Amino acid sequence: MQATAQEAGSRRARAAAGLETGLARIRRPFGWLLLALVASYAWLVVGAPIDSVQGVIQKILYVHPPLAYGAYLGFVLTAVGGVLYLRSNREIYDQLAVAGAEVGVVFCTLMMVTGPIWAKGTWGHWWSWDPRLTLTLLLWFVYLSYLLLRGFTEGGARTARFASVYGIVGTLLIPLNYFVIDLFQGRTMHPANLARGSLGSGMGMPFLVANLTLFAAFVYLVLLRWEVEFWRARSLEDDALEAEEFGAR
Amino acid sequence: MMYLIAAYGITIGTLAFYLSVLLRERRRLSRDARRSG
Image 1: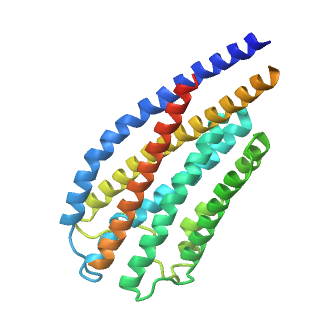
Image 2: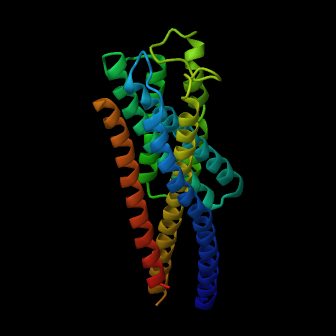
Image 3: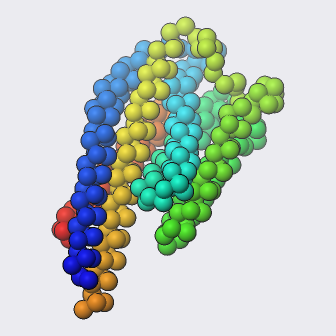
Protein backbone atom coordinates (compact mmCIF):
# COMPACT_ATOMS: atom_id res chain seq x y z
CA MET A 1 0.00 0.00 0.00
CA GLN A 2 2.78 2.31 1.06
CA ALA A 3 4.84 1.30 -2.00
CA THR A 4 1.93 2.18 -4.31
CA ALA A 5 1.60 5.61 -2.67
CA GLN A 6 5.35 6.12 -3.08
CA GLU A 7 5.21 5.07 -6.74
CA ALA A 8 2.32 7.44 -7.38
CA GLY A 9 4.24 10.16 -5.58
CA SER A 10 7.37 9.67 -7.68
CA ARG A 11 5.29 9.48 -10.91
CA ARG A 12 3.68 12.77 -9.95
CA ALA A 13 7.07 14.27 -9.14
CA ARG A 14 8.47 13.20 -12.55
CA ALA A 15 5.47 14.63 -14.42
CA ALA A 16 5.68 17.82 -12.36
CA ALA A 17 9.39 18.25 -13.04
CA GLY A 18 8.81 17.80 -16.79
CA LEU A 19 6.02 20.34 -16.87
CA GLU A 20 7.94 22.83 -14.77
CA THR A 21 10.97 22.55 -17.05
CA GLY A 22 8.70 23.03 -20.08
CA LEU A 23 7.14 26.20 -18.68
CA ALA A 24 10.54 27.62 -17.72
CA ARG A 25 11.90 26.74 -21.19
CA ILE A 26 9.13 28.72 -22.88
CA ARG A 27 9.42 31.60 -20.41
CA ARG A 28 13.16 32.29 -20.76
CA PRO A 29 13.21 33.45 -24.41
CA PHE A 30 10.43 35.88 -23.56
CA GLY A 31 12.65 37.30 -20.82
CA TRP A 32 15.44 38.00 -23.32
CA LEU A 33 12.96 39.37 -25.85
CA LEU A 34 11.54 41.64 -23.15
CA LEU A 35 14.99 42.98 -22.25
CA ALA A 36 15.71 43.76 -25.91
CA LEU A 37 12.32 45.39 -26.40
CA VAL A 38 12.46 47.54 -23.24
CA ALA A 39 15.49 49.42 -24.55
CA SER A 40 13.92 50.18 -27.94
CA TYR A 41 10.59 51.00 -26.25
CA ALA A 42 12.25 53.65 -24.04
CA TRP A 43 14.18 55.08 -26.99
CA LEU A 44 11.09 55.26 -29.23
CA VAL A 45 8.82 56.79 -26.56
CA VAL A 46 11.36 59.53 -25.79
CA GLY A 47 11.80 60.25 -29.51
CA ALA A 48 8.08 60.05 -30.42
CA PRO A 49 6.55 63.26 -31.80
CA ILE A 50 4.77 65.55 -29.33
CA ASP A 51 1.05 65.94 -30.00
CA SER A 52 0.13 69.48 -31.07
CA VAL A 53 -3.14 69.51 -29.07
CA GLN A 54 -2.44 67.53 -25.88
CA GLY A 55 1.29 68.12 -25.61
CA VAL A 56 3.69 65.69 -23.97
CA ILE A 57 1.00 63.97 -21.84
CA GLN A 58 -0.30 62.29 -25.01
CA LYS A 59 2.70 59.93 -24.72
CA ILE A 60 0.63 58.00 -22.15
CA LEU A 61 -0.79 56.50 -25.35
CA TYR A 62 2.27 54.21 -25.42
CA VAL A 63 1.37 52.61 -22.09
CA HIS A 64 -2.38 52.92 -21.47
CA PRO A 65 -3.90 50.96 -24.44
CA PRO A 66 -1.23 48.20 -24.33
CA LEU A 67 -2.10 47.68 -20.65
CA ALA A 68 -5.77 47.39 -21.63
CA TYR A 69 -4.96 44.74 -24.26
CA GLY A 70 -2.93 42.83 -21.64
CA ALA A 71 -5.87 42.95 -19.22
CA TYR A 72 -8.27 41.64 -21.88
CA LEU A 73 -5.82 38.90 -22.80
CA GLY A 74 -5.42 37.85 -19.15
CA PHE A 75 -9.17 37.51 -18.72
CA VAL A 76 -9.50 35.58 -22.00
CA LEU A 77 -6.79 33.20 -20.74
CA THR A 78 -8.83 32.70 -17.56
CA ALA A 79 -11.79 31.65 -19.70
CA VAL A 80 -9.62 29.40 -21.92
CA GLY A 81 -8.13 27.76 -18.80
CA GLY A 82 -11.65 27.37 -17.42
CA VAL A 83 -12.98 25.69 -20.57
CA LEU A 84 -9.99 23.32 -20.73
CA TYR A 85 -10.34 22.49 -17.04
CA LEU A 86 -14.06 21.72 -17.36
CA ARG A 87 -13.35 19.47 -20.35
CA SER A 88 -10.37 17.58 -18.95
CA ASN A 89 -10.42 18.09 -15.15
CA ARG A 90 -6.65 18.65 -15.30
CA GLU A 91 -5.44 20.95 -12.54
CA ILE A 92 -2.80 22.53 -14.76
CA TYR A 93 -5.53 24.35 -16.75
CA ASP A 94 -7.11 25.68 -13.58
CA GLN A 95 -3.65 26.99 -12.63
CA LEU A 96 -3.43 28.74 -16.01
CA ALA A 97 -6.82 30.36 -15.34
CA VAL A 98 -5.58 31.71 -11.99
CA ALA A 99 -2.36 33.01 -13.59
CA GLY A 100 -4.32 34.78 -16.36
CA ALA A 101 -6.70 36.39 -13.87
CA GLU A 102 -3.96 37.66 -11.58
CA VAL A 103 -1.77 39.13 -14.31
CA GLY A 104 -4.92 40.49 -15.98
CA VAL A 105 -5.92 42.25 -12.76
CA VAL A 106 -2.42 43.75 -12.42
CA PHE A 107 -2.62 45.08 -16.01
CA CYS A 108 -6.22 46.26 -15.51
CA THR A 109 -5.26 48.09 -12.28
CA LEU A 110 -2.40 49.85 -14.06
CA MET A 111 -4.70 50.74 -16.95
CA MET A 112 -7.11 52.24 -14.41
CA VAL A 113 -4.29 54.26 -12.86
CA THR A 114 -2.74 55.55 -16.09
CA GLY A 115 -6.18 56.41 -17.55
CA PRO A 116 -7.20 58.87 -14.82
CA ILE A 117 -3.70 60.43 -14.88
CA TRP A 118 -4.18 61.06 -18.61
CA ALA A 119 -7.73 62.30 -17.96
CA LYS A 120 -6.58 64.76 -15.30
CA GLY A 121 -4.03 66.21 -17.70
CA THR A 122 -6.46 66.55 -20.63
CA TRP A 123 -10.05 66.69 -19.29
CA GLY A 124 -9.10 68.46 -16.04
CA HIS A 125 -10.59 65.80 -13.75
CA TRP A 126 -9.57 62.30 -12.71
CA TRP A 127 -12.75 60.37 -13.37
CA SER A 128 -16.02 60.54 -15.25
CA TRP A 129 -18.90 58.05 -15.08
CA ASP A 130 -18.56 57.53 -18.80
CA PRO A 131 -19.78 54.13 -20.14
CA ARG A 132 -16.24 52.90 -21.02
CA LEU A 133 -14.77 53.90 -17.66
CA THR A 134 -17.72 52.49 -15.70
CA LEU A 135 -17.59 49.16 -17.55
CA THR A 136 -13.82 48.96 -17.04
CA LEU A 137 -14.34 49.44 -13.31
CA LEU A 138 -16.95 46.68 -13.38
CA LEU A 139 -14.56 44.40 -15.30
CA TRP A 140 -11.88 45.06 -12.68
CA PHE A 141 -14.32 44.21 -9.86
CA VAL A 142 -15.40 40.98 -11.60
CA TYR A 143 -11.82 39.67 -11.82
CA LEU A 144 -10.84 40.99 -8.40
CA SER A 145 -13.79 38.98 -7.05
CA TYR A 146 -12.49 35.95 -8.97
CA LEU A 147 -9.15 36.26 -7.17
CA LEU A 148 -10.86 36.79 -3.81
CA LEU A 149 -12.98 33.69 -4.46
CA ARG A 150 -9.81 31.70 -5.11
CA GLY A 151 -7.97 33.22 -2.16
CA PHE A 152 -10.67 32.85 0.49
CA THR A 153 -11.82 29.33 -0.29
CA GLU A 154 -10.00 26.11 0.49
CA GLY A 155 -9.58 25.18 -3.14
CA GLY A 156 -10.39 21.75 -4.50
CA ALA A 157 -12.34 20.58 -7.52
CA ARG A 158 -15.63 22.27 -6.57
CA THR A 159 -14.06 25.72 -6.26
CA ALA A 160 -12.12 25.18 -9.50
CA ARG A 161 -15.32 24.23 -11.37
CA PHE A 162 -17.23 27.22 -10.00
CA ALA A 163 -14.31 29.56 -10.76
CA SER A 164 -14.08 28.17 -14.31
CA VAL A 165 -17.73 28.99 -15.02
CA TYR A 166 -17.33 32.41 -13.38
CA GLY A 167 -14.23 33.12 -15.51
CA ILE A 168 -16.00 32.07 -18.72
CA VAL A 169 -19.08 34.22 -18.01
CA GLY A 170 -16.87 37.16 -17.03
CA THR A 171 -15.37 37.38 -20.52
CA LEU A 172 -18.76 38.52 -21.86
CA LEU A 173 -17.86 41.92 -20.44
CA ILE A 174 -14.79 42.24 -22.68
CA PRO A 175 -16.51 42.80 -26.08
CA LEU A 176 -19.08 45.00 -24.33
CA ASN A 177 -16.25 47.04 -22.79
CA TYR A 178 -14.45 47.35 -26.12
CA PHE A 179 -17.47 48.24 -28.29
CA VAL A 180 -19.38 50.37 -25.77
CA ILE A 181 -18.14 53.57 -27.45
CA ASP A 182 -19.61 52.41 -30.78
CA LEU A 183 -22.85 51.42 -29.01
CA PHE A 184 -23.12 54.96 -27.65
CA GLN A 185 -22.25 56.26 -31.14
CA GLY A 186 -19.27 58.18 -29.84
CA ARG A 187 -21.24 60.13 -27.20
CA THR A 188 -18.65 59.32 -24.54
CA MET A 189 -15.82 61.23 -22.86
CA HIS A 190 -13.38 58.42 -23.62
CA PRO A 191 -11.89 58.71 -27.12
CA ALA A 192 -12.95 56.21 -29.81
CA ASN A 193 -11.05 52.93 -30.23
CA LEU A 194 -7.86 53.21 -32.25
CA ALA A 195 -8.28 52.37 -35.91
CA ARG A 196 -5.92 52.16 -38.89
CA GLY A 197 -4.58 55.63 -39.67
CA SER A 198 -5.95 57.25 -36.49
CA LEU A 199 -2.48 57.82 -35.04
CA GLY A 200 -0.49 60.91 -35.95
CA SER A 201 2.57 60.77 -38.18
CA GLY A 202 5.55 59.06 -36.52
CA MET A 203 3.42 57.56 -33.72
CA GLY A 204 2.80 54.18 -35.34
CA MET A 205 6.20 52.59 -34.68
CA PRO A 206 6.44 53.61 -30.98
CA PHE A 207 2.88 52.34 -30.51
CA LEU A 208 3.69 49.01 -32.17
CA VAL A 209 6.85 48.52 -30.09
CA ALA A 210 4.94 49.53 -26.93
CA ASN A 211 2.38 46.82 -27.65
CA LEU A 212 5.07 44.22 -28.35
CA THR A 213 6.98 45.12 -25.16
CA LEU A 214 3.95 44.93 -22.90
CA PHE A 215 2.84 41.74 -24.65
CA ALA A 216 6.24 40.15 -23.95
CA ALA A 217 6.00 41.33 -20.32
CA PHE A 218 2.51 39.86 -20.13
CA VAL A 219 3.56 36.45 -21.49
CA TYR A 220 6.61 36.33 -19.21
CA LEU A 221 4.55 37.19 -16.12
CA VAL A 222 1.76 34.71 -16.96
CA LEU A 223 4.24 31.87 -17.46
CA LEU A 224 6.06 32.74 -14.23
CA ARG A 225 2.77 33.03 -12.30
CA TRP A 226 1.66 29.69 -13.79
CA GLU A 227 4.88 28.10 -12.52
CA VAL A 228 4.30 29.58 -9.05
CA GLU A 229 0.73 28.26 -8.95
CA PHE A 230 1.97 24.90 -10.09
CA TRP A 231 4.64 24.75 -7.34
CA ARG A 232 2.10 25.86 -4.74
CA ALA A 233 -0.25 23.02 -5.71
CA ARG A 234 2.68 20.59 -5.55
CA SER A 235 3.67 21.84 -2.12
CA LEU A 236 0.07 21.35 -0.87
CA GLU A 237 0.05 17.83 -2.37
CA ASP A 238 3.33 17.01 -0.58
CA ASP A 239 1.88 18.27 2.71
CA ALA A 240 -1.23 16.12 2.23
CA LEU A 241 0.90 13.08 1.36
CA GLU A 242 3.07 13.59 4.43
CA ALA A 243 -0.02 13.90 6.63
CA GLU A 244 -1.40 10.68 5.07
CA GLU A 245 1.85 8.81 5.73
CA PHE A 246 1.98 10.15 9.28
CA GLY A 247 -1.61 8.96 9.83
CA ALA A 248 -0.81 5.50 8.45
CA ARG A 249 2.05 5.04 10.91
CA MET B 1 5.35 66.29 -17.75
CA MET B 2 4.76 65.30 -14.11
CA TYR B 3 1.67 63.30 -15.08
CA LEU B 4 3.62 61.50 -17.78
CA ILE B 5 6.43 60.57 -15.38
CA ALA B 6 3.84 59.42 -12.80
CA ALA B 7 2.07 57.17 -15.34
CA TYR B 8 5.29 55.50 -16.56
CA GLY B 9 6.84 55.40 -13.08
CA ILE B 10 3.83 53.68 -11.51
CA THR B 11 3.56 51.18 -14.38
CA ILE B 12 7.24 50.23 -14.49
CA GLY B 13 7.57 50.23 -10.69
CA THR B 14 4.51 48.03 -10.17
CA LEU B 15 5.47 45.53 -12.89
CA ALA B 16 9.05 45.32 -11.56
CA PHE B 17 7.78 44.79 -8.01
CA TYR B 18 5.30 42.12 -9.13
CA LEU B 19 8.05 40.36 -11.10
CA SER B 20 10.38 40.36 -8.09
CA VAL B 21 7.63 38.92 -5.84
CA LEU B 22 6.90 36.13 -8.34
CA LEU B 23 10.58 35.27 -8.81
CA ARG B 24 11.16 35.13 -5.04
CA GLU B 25 8.05 32.99 -4.51
CA ARG B 26 9.00 30.61 -7.31
CA ARG B 27 12.52 30.22 -5.94
CA ARG B 28 11.22 29.57 -2.41
CA LEU B 29 8.65 26.97 -3.53
CA SER B 30 11.03 25.07 -5.80
CA ARG B 31 13.68 25.05 -3.04
CA ASP B 32 11.15 23.65 -0.55
CA ALA B 33 10.04 21.02 -3.08
CA ARG B 34 13.63 19.91 -3.69
CA ARG B 35 14.28 19.74 0.05
CA SER B 36 11.24 17.54 0.64
CA GLY B 37 12.32 15.31 -2.29
